[in-house]
Length: 295
Image (cartoon, rainbow, N blue to C red; front, side, top):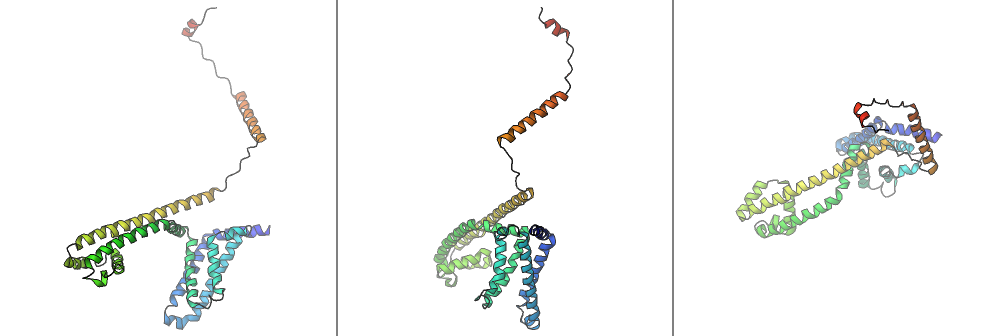
């Protein structure tokens, strides 16, 4: 009884709007402390205070995790099936592992990873994260197509501009890097003018590259991500609707229950027939009398 009461209270706290707001505030304060530590002057003047605030943030993270565990106290396995809970435990317990707590770089990365916890507090952020995860299979195919297109244009660029611009097209690797940087269309006017001075094929080369890589492939990437985000939004909405509606009520379809339901339906129909008055008879018309058969 005590466990059920404690679980109900923790569920009430976890479902309250202020709980998510408080968790996000702790994450924001922790991120601000990480940013302030990058300034040497602030670190020298207020370093102990920043570390004290960080310890308070860690205490807030532990308290939040304990409350979430209390919400699953009646079924602890449900708590450990949630990937976000495992992620929180990992980033809080990792600094205690020997070999990690002595590594300053790993500790900073773990402290930075606490900011990712903001995704679990807001459904809209979770939808974005799920959408990115759903787009990964299609993103692999997109990267393969992009690499093939850039490689093909890099070989053509090496043949056209390799001798005149060795710093950009001297090798296929340099050419691929130059074309990858050209995806942003930065300084495309000057690049096109310099190419025209080398060969007249520079115009169709750069124009076709802009159409194929900068426009078509970029729009393909945007469409891929938008489709994945839409699917993630629909899945989140379906999951939320399923949680609100609750589990389906089991129906007993054993033979004796079906017979009892059938008898109840017959009794109801018989009662309706007994209580319903008979319909009045309409008077016979002369035509119907004449059409009646003679005895």
